[in-house]
Length: 333
Image 1 (cartoon, helix red, strand yellow):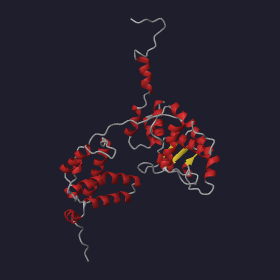
Image 2: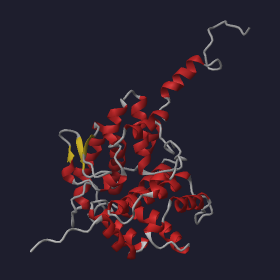
Image 3: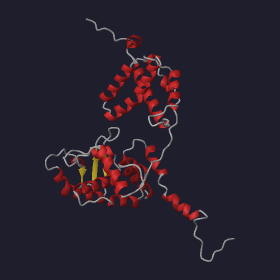
């Protein structure tokens, strides 16, 4: 018995015409999950794509084949004037994120012969602003934050160890929350970050100061927290479970603004920004910072070179007429 020939692109295209744009978008989101993307990534794409699908339906566009370049440009104009729930306009980065997600959806549909061409590739995307990290702590401010933690209590010593690790390693909040006991090698002074952003593993160094606080935590605090239950995470709650991201954000923010009384926004991520900036100012190579932070592209790391201005301050102080120290007895001309 001969096997039937697979459908041609045209035949497949015709069959797909009964499926709506909303249904195809649901298939695409399911594809992301099946491909190993995190739930957070899938959620982000859903939040960017579904408003577009709803907008299309409100204007009578129900199928993917109806989405043209002119239609996408119309939606782009809609985004420029779109106001969020707080009344503020959608920033350029938000517009770029939504349009990029639509482009990825259309590319996926093109590969599956749902559409015959991708109008999204012809859209001129807005240029995203090259933003600097919102807040960065100086070395003295960082030390002030760490020393403001009362390490005499069980939770206090744990929190001090958490902040010391954030500053020493520059790891992300989720990476810290996912750390297991087996990921820490105190003998080598390293920590294994498993499936960080982009599902990439990496090994990061842990400084002697952070290791000292970690050893105190592991010896004096963690056994008491894991008395009844132990999830295996490095940092655990009073119930022995891993710490939630919201918990880490709350404790870091409370220490920065509540205990240290610094007028700085941000929480866990501010230690990542600060570590990278401070190391660059002290002479670290950008590529070494890239490896520690786990950035895929060097350009992502190079943003910190625009924040680390210690060398510029030295040049400014040495050469600016208002800052140059005049020799004794010198007079103005």
